[in-house]
Image (cartoon, rainbow, N blue to C red; front, side, top):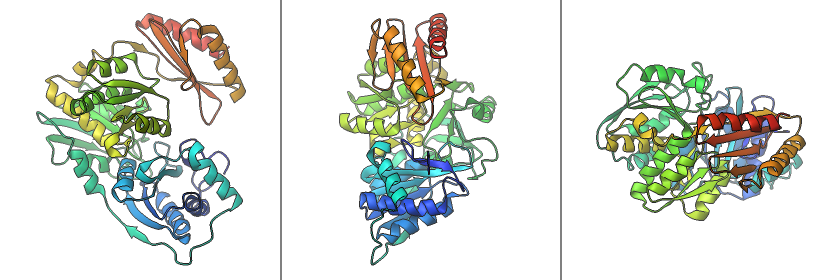
Length: 445
């Protein structure tokens, strides 16, 4: 079990780290911990997801909980179902964007409130390790099949405000993205599908738009001409990557800025969160359109809690997660794509023209450095704070961030391994390169 109970979910190699026996125990531990009575459970198309569902459901129902079997679905649909069905807990069986050999569990309370390492995953791990399960129920719970795909699609379509027809291309990477794209049916969006058939072997390419090489097929399709933009989904479709009408990759924080503009159209003055790795231009765009920009730390559990605390309507993360108050303060890649479509259709401009004035600074991208241990990472942070903290505006929302007049950087540690991650931005490309190399030299000394 070591290492699979993580900060945001439970995830590991199927057959060795994640097994049916473990899934059965997780089902029992989940019900023991929450005392839940009605659990919505969805799963992605990995070949192992069906057997893991059966085992989890067996464990959960043995303690008297009823399981609502959502079948194959996207993670955003599982969040939607959790609230729509009035469940007091929810589970999605998926390894998200990880390769096919992996699988795991995303866990929620009622209203899709996430369970993280600090709010329950560590407790569930302990219950599993100690076999400290509640007593079996005198009357086991039931398993009922429920399909909310059509309900979710109708809900997402209600946000459509297109002023002209659009044509887009969608790369589903043989994952669950085609469930999200059902929301485009019946709107003025026509779309071409790449690799729409769910296939847990992911035969065409890895379902991970953060790896830019996985976008090559989508870029090639867009460059055939006649498209307004393209969308690539990860395996469980809770993340989306975008390319413009020329097939060029649009940074995910630039999409946060565009979606914020569309959300503020219907919610003037609302709070919008962006993660601390995002460009200065995101904050400036939110302010320019009358919103209240608020910075969040990295990680869905943290962002969702901050959104609830501030009653925010939207948040965007540099990793391609887009969170909406309307979907239980959880991700919806379909709604993110629809918001981009709304903006493009209303503007009279192409996506590249809309992005150009927002993409006004120069970013390093996230650069990872492997260190010998987490102690070394802590020493690096201390050294950077000592050297830069008094010279700029320093804060420690997540790792160390320091802002100057013409550049900023954030350095933070991985939650799971001895990696330190650098993000840096400057007003000129030359300063970005110089400061990036300067910080990296300190990190790697």
